[in-house]
Image (tube, rainbow over the protein chains, first blue to last red):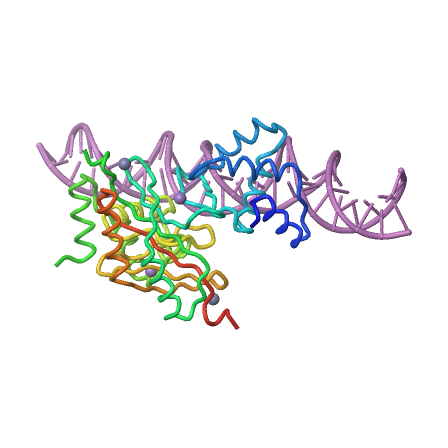
Length: 142
Length: 142
DNA sequence: CACAAAAATGATAATGGATATCAATTTAAA
DNA sequence: TTTAAATTGATATCCATTATCATTTTTGTG
Ligand SMILES: [Mn+2]
Ligand SMILES: [Mn+2]
Ligand SMILES: [Zn+2]
Ligand SMILES: [Zn+2]
């Protein structure tokens, strides 16, 4: 049982990359966020801890976190990339209100099962998937 | 039973917008494409017919086509927006090879059914959805 | 401890797709 | 014909992300 820091460290070691203070800070700030984080929010909170960290390093590190499976890029909110935690999180998909942009997370085991079936039918190996349902939430229906 | 031109015309009429030669050309070229079209390809083919049409009008018109339900924006290929026909097409989702970017279309009635269930559970009205499965295709597995 | 090679960083320039602007043109309706 | 509104194309602008590059940091080796 490893925690996220260990995951990142071993990923970096295998890739002959280095574990740096900046990468640690960025990972920690990212982990402190619940749900879906935009790069801008992430960057603001990172700068509170270490104002010398540049935006380029944030992007670079987030890409690494996606590569090693600690993050996934999530829904596109107002044109900006956003991320959410992937490790130690139960898999889920998203229900998005097109009016207020509220995001509800859900999971449905049968949908996951049929996805596997589909991959098998077409000879694909399953890597990951993205499923977003767009509609109007209860609040916005009023 | 209306065809696409009629759909667009009546949408424009209701919105107090105008049916123009440019819009007709763009719609026709779009309809002549099978599958998923990037803006760049679309623009090239439009210019073959009317070289005076500008890229801004193409974007503007494609947005209209999405609004009136004749097109939907589809998967993001190499950073560019792409569209596919929506009217008179059977609904389907996408299986995408992460290696060669091949796109296979599939449909699964049960998945659609469960999506409705989920919306009902959370009190959402269902508008549309997007489901993409990423994996490696048979050819690329070799 | 040097010392060298490789990797990482931050500032900033560059990229590129999409949108906004605006003067000129076209359209619809009276 | 006349007028107001809509549309167009050229082009400027926006803005998120990536590339560049000089400098700094890290790692490993003797
Ligand atoms: Mn989520
Ligand atoms: Mn398709
Ligand atoms: Zn809502
Ligand atoms: Zn493939």
